[in-house]
Image (cartoon, rainbow, N blue to C red; front, top):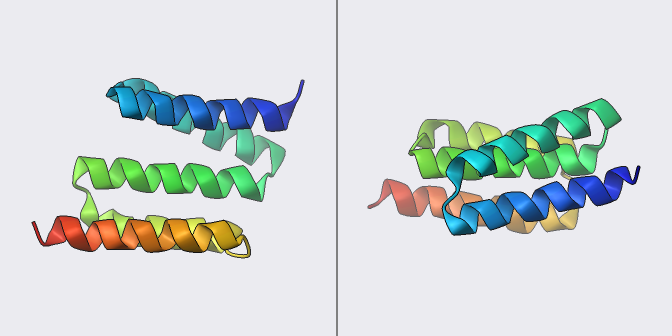
Length: 100
């Protein structure tokens, strides 16, 4: 099958679940994306899955894990300029949550 299409579909579905408040489905899709990416040695989808895991940590209030997860994401796919934007956004959100 089309592994790239399947991974893109998982990403889209995960975000849709998150937007609809279907937390368990989001977590399941992120886990499936991470496993698929690891199996296929895809730095691109591993980095996105790590970014989604950062979202999970932010939502759970596990702020002490966020910087490490962001660092993991960047270490996997730091040469992707899109991840600089994701990294910045997640670190800004971390600071905002800590200051609430």
